[in-house]
Image (tube, helix red, strand yellow):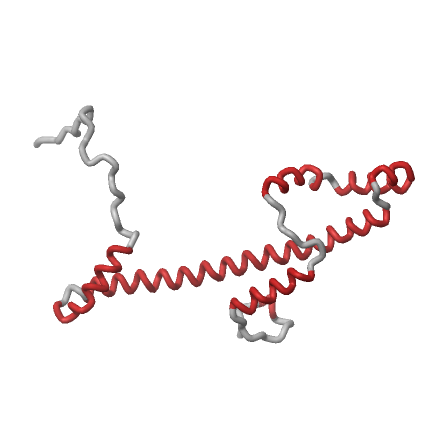
Length: 175
């Protein structure tokens, strides 16, 4: 029985390799209308206008529909703006789904890195124990490499090995 309750109505699929997923995402990207990256500086300038309320947008569409002068001035028709408003709503569902997928892929990779790291740390611990016996001397070079690369259990280097002249050692209690 599967723990995945969200996939109960679908037929099970075989796992794909990451390269195939990347190729599929790139192919989908080519079919998205107006797809493109926007530089950070440009995004910052776009945010204020992009954040106006839906009610304000609807009022402006109604105003354009009520005045041909305004329509001519802005160069957009109410029908065009209504379609763009619908597109925004529909593509926001795609955006939400992609964000959810990204979070799922990131969580899955975190679990993979955790399993890998945990196994590496367990290997280090077992190797340290085994290398204490002369029979396992062949593990010593491997242990030395792992010790040099292990960032866990190391004391941080102090920036100043010599105490400052103003440093007064703590008094010891004498009995």
